[in-house]
Length: 343
Image 1 (cartoon, rainbow, N blue to C red):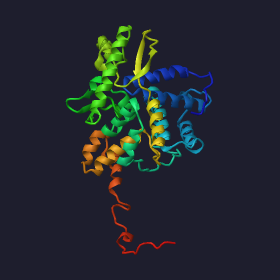
Image 2 (tube, rainbow, N blue to C red; image 1 turned 90 degrees about the vertical axis):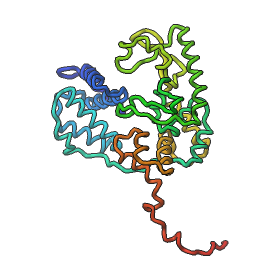
Image 3 (cartoon, helix red, strand yellow; image 1 turned 180 degrees about the vertical axis):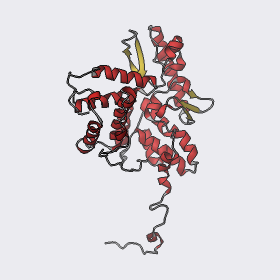
Image 4 (spheres, helix red, strand yellow; image 1 turned 60 degrees about the vertical axis):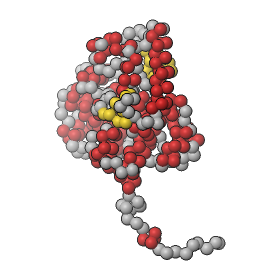
């Protein structure tokens, strides 16, 4: 963020009302809260960039100028620029009902160059060292990221009822793109996860005894089944240590563990394990996919487990099958060389 704030002046609908409508439109279409926050933030930056003028006063040249500035002066990544473009297009197309065809075709816009980078992948030994350097909830989450191929937020937003011990499965609800999927529950994780869920059950019982125990429910479930918010099955698998005040209801409820807690723990564990790679939580998911393909599993199976819409996204993990240059053996490996002489 650039820290810019739009001035108070505007014409027509005030920007604050505009962003309220933007939020309502996105919620009606079941966009995730993270996408909602990102789109509102980009809308505010767009308005601030043009001195607080209302978007109705602006046209395609102003949109192109903002997106070009992001790439040239802001030096944002291609993915960030694309997100900003999608947010501004949504604001015009779906909220203001204004066509911006030239922007949709990217005419006149300088685009940040999209680089194709291979994901950072840990070896099996490095994964073992990393997990051994963790303990508590971060260790259990890391085991799920690597053992089930979950994204960090997918792991942290699991509900108790999403874990099927008998079927050795985990149900991922509303993953990236709002899609549900089923992945495996690793056998090595099951005993540790059972003990953890027993602690969660006791914590929930204490919250209920203290007059709390309610958890936020998705969509309209809270209105349809108000009692469900107090059931154990809907509680987070990884609840936060502290409760927060729900200003709408006036009671204290427990959110899931904040992602930064696990991210910091994994970063510290990478250093302790002396892993000389830029490894993060998502690296464990990359390693999950790579090691499955390396073991001979079908690419379509891996695609389903990861929740990718397009198999081409999954294909990037086949780089592990390429020894050097596309599987070609170097001619240097065929030379019958004498051992190196000592200096």
